[in-house]
Image 1 (cartoon, one colour):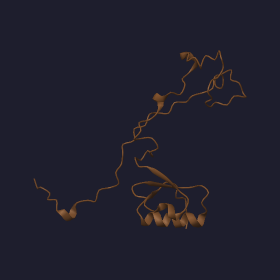
Image 2: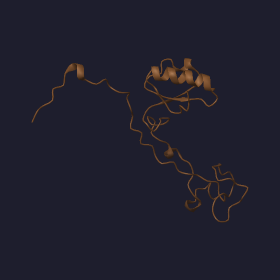
Image 3: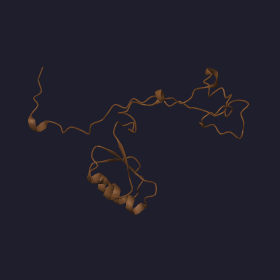
Image 4: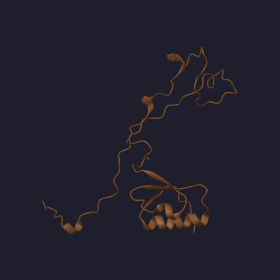
Length: 137
């Protein structure tokens, strides 16, 4: 067997530090009577805090469905992270890329085509990954 020698010059530069993002699956919390066979058409299937005196969901009857609790949160070091394992920043102009290192860039939706092209060029120069490029030359 031939052994490989690793020289000092051949050592790789360490990549951006990534965190393994193991987020909990998101639960869906509904307003009572907003889903199912006999649903109320006026109530959209989204979460609203139950406030009624006799509301079964407010008094946490198990058969009425889950409510959001503190335990549904993700760990603090994972919260706000992109699934790729790096923090994400929202950029509106080229000046906001200053000092951005080891992050993922998302360009704001209100940025025009011309300024978006400038941001993309600057980000490529800084070796940053852009999540929503979408610029055609």
